[in-house]
Image: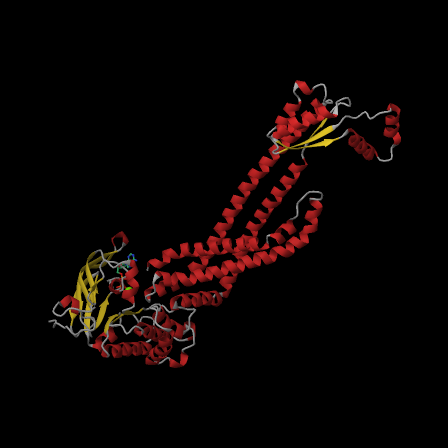
Amino acid sequence: MRRPLSTGPFATTVGNRDESTVVTFQHVTKIYQKKNVGLEDVSIHIEPGEFVSVVGQSGSGKTTLAKLIIAEERVDKGRIIIGGWDITHIKHHEVPTLRRQIGVVFQDFKLLPKKSLFENVAFALEVAGQSTRSIRTVVPQLLKIVGLEQKIDRYPDQVSGGEQQRVVIARALAHRPKLLVADEPTGNLDTINAQEIISLLKKINEFGTTVVLVTHNREIVNMLRKRVITLDHGHVIADQRSGKYLL
Amino acid sequence: MVTLGRMIVFGVQTFWRNIWLSLVTVLIVTLNLFLMSVVLGLNVVGQQTLTAVKERVNLSVYFTATTSEDRVETVRQELLARPEVESVDLISRAERLELLRRSQGQSNLINAAIEALGENPLGAGLIVTAKTLDGYNAIARFLQSDRYETIIEDTGREFETNQTVINRLTLIVGRIQGASLWLTLLFGLIAVLMVFNAIRVTIYAHREEIGIMKLVGASDAFVRGPFVVTSLLYGLLASLFTTIIFVPILTITNPFFSQFFAGYDVNILGYVQQHLWQILGLEVVVGCGLSVLSSLFAIGRYLRV
Ligand SMILES: Nc1ncnc2c1ncn2[C@@H]1O[C@H](COP(=O)(O)OP(=O)(O)OP(=O)(O)O)[C@@H](O)[C@H]1O
Ligand SMILES: [Mg+2]
C-alpha cells in the first residue's frame, strides 16, 4: 500500500522506509497523569508530500499526537522518528532545533500579543539567529503569501481571527519546513475564513510541504479527499487513503 | 553578537510595551530598596551614636591634696600599662581649682573659702578612658585595691555609681546591637520576598508568551535573555529613584538630626555625601542582583514547554 520514497525532503538513507518518512510512530503510547490515556499503541507512517487529516472525537488523542511530534510531550512507550531523527528521548536543549524544522499552527493562534505582525513572523527567524537583513526581505514575502502585506505593522489584537491565523501560518512557513502540523487551525474561525485557511494549507502542500491537519470539521475532510486517520480513545481505528469523515 | 543585541532590544521592548507593569514593578523595587536603605542608615546612625556615647564615658580618679605629683604620675603609668586602658589624662591641682571656679561662675563663696584656707584644697585627678565598656569594671577594681586607699579621695562610692551606669550602658548597647541586627535581617528578608514576588508577578504575566516563544523554537537562553535585560532596567531605575528620593529627605531632616545629636560626632548628611557613589553602587548591585536572580528563578517553571 505504501510505496517507498527515497527522494523525500527529509530523506537521509535510501532504502530504509522509516528514515524516508516524514513522521513515524512505532507503537506509541502516551499516558498522562492519573492514567489518562492520550494515545495507546499507535503506529503511523507519513510520507513526504502527503496531506493527512487526523480526526476523532473530543479526547480521542489528536492534540496529543500533534504535541508528540513537536516534543511538547514525551512518549511513555514506543518510538517517534521525525525526518530520520529519532526524537523519542530528545534532550531538552535539542528541542528548539526540532521545532525550527516543523511549522506549527494552533487553534488559539499563539501570537505574541506585544509584537507586531512583522515582529511575530520575524521572531521565528530571530530565534534561529538569522541575519537582520535576510529577515527584512523574507518576512514581508511571507506575509504577502498569506495576503497580509498591508497590515505588517499592526498588532494581533488589531486584526481579525482569520488574519491572525494567517500570520501564524506565515510564521510556521518562515523556516521553509518540510512538515507543517496544524491542530484545529479553523476551530475558532467562521466557514469563510476556515475555507481560506484550508486552501492556504493545500497550496503549501502543493509546494511540497507535508501537512498534518487535525480537525473536527466534517465538510473540510470530505472536501479534501486526502488521507484520513481516525482516532478513538487513543487508538487508530481507521486510516484511509482518500477518506471521509467516519464518525 | 546578533543574538545578544536582539536580547537587549527585546528586553527594552518588553519594558516599554508593558510600561504600567514595569512602572509598578520599579515602584515596588524602589520602595524595598528605600526600606533597606533606611534600616541600614539607622544602623549607621546607631553605630555612630554608640561610638560617640562610648567616647564620652570615662572614669575620674581624684587624689588627696597631699599626694605628690610623682605618686600621681606613677599611678598614671600603672594605669597606662593595663591592657584595657585606652588613655589617661592628667588634671593638675591648679586645673581642678580653675575648673571648679569656672563652674561656680561669679559666686564668691568658693574664692572666699579658698582664700580663707590659704592654699589649694584639691588634689590632682586622672581621667581614664577604657578601650571597651567592659574595661571600666576591671579598672575600677584595680583602683579600689588597698594600696591606693590612702591616696585616692572617697573614690569607693563614685566607682560604684559609675559601675552601675556603665553596666547599664553596656547592656543597652548590647540590646540595641542585637535588636538592630534582627531588625535588619527581618526587613531585609521582607524586602527580598517582596521584590521576588513583584518580579514573579511580571514573569507570570508573560507566561503564555514564554510558552509561545518556546513552541516557535526559542532556546531557554533566548527566552531568558530579554527578561534579564528587563530586570536590569527595573533594578537600575529603582536604585536611581531611591537615591534621588533620599537626598532631599536627608537635606530636610538633617537640621533635626543635628539638633538631636548636638555635641556628638554624628553627621548623616555628611556621611551620605561622602559615600554617595558607594551608596548608589550598593543600591544598583542589590537592586539589579535581586531583580535578575528573581526573574531567572521565576522563569524556570515556564520554560519546560
Ligand atoms: N495535560 C494533560 N493531563 C492529563 N490528561 C490529559 C492532558 N492532556 C490531555 N489529556 C487527556 O488525554 C486524552 C486525549 O487528549 P487530547 O487533547 O489529545 O484530545 P483531542 O483529541 O485533542 O480532543 P479535542 O478534540 O477536545 O481537542 C483526553 O482524555 C484528555 O483528557
Ligand atoms: Mg485537541
